[in-house]
Amino acid sequence: GENVEQHPSTLSVQEGDSAVIKCTYSDSASNYFPWYKQELGKRPQLIIDIRSNVGEKKDQRIAVTLNKTAKHFSLHITETQPEDSAVYFCAASSGRGFKTIFGAGTRLFVKA
Amino acid sequence: DVKVTQSSRYLVKRTGEKVFLECVQDMDHENMFWYRQDPGLGLRLIYFSYDVKMKEKGDIPEGYSVSREKKERFSLILESASTNQTSMYLCASSRGQLNEKLFFGSGTQLSVL
Image (cartoon, rainbow over all chains, first blue to last red; front, side):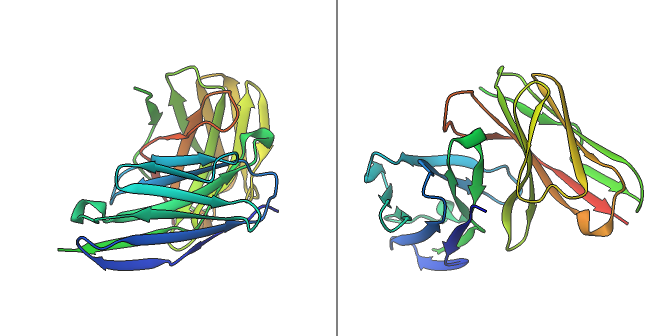
């Protein structure tokens, strides 16, 4: 079945540094790749997404890149701040039945 | 703003009990999903529905069933709860267009003793 692998599982950075989280997916029919942020005790919320016809998308300090050939996509956070500390999930959706499969998550710690 | 409401924040049940988890969304979304969240495993899809009375199995449907009699409501049923079903359960919804973002409920932490 479809699978999404996410690395690393834990990431610790100094405030102001960059953070990169990487994901790979198995279903070549996947065409939508959202990223969700989950703060402690709260529900996951979408922070950025990318569709298969786009290679890169940026929103302020957050950017996502997609390599469809390699089935890789990545989240880049620049100038990290303590409030960026959370669990981040990547996901892939194939549109067949609108099914969205998530990675296992990355716990990001930003040290002040 | 979209509101996805789960009926209980915390639930404690005994092994063998039948358990109902309810989810209601108020934005007329076609698609609804049930995930369970366990540490280190991310969000795993149990079942989803793209229309009233329609349902599809996700990756881990064993031990669960669902019901979607009305568009706004999607229920997850544990026919005979077991201790390995202790988990955080998250409901989500999205619009009918392909590949729309998910809106999540606040979750139900279920403990099966």
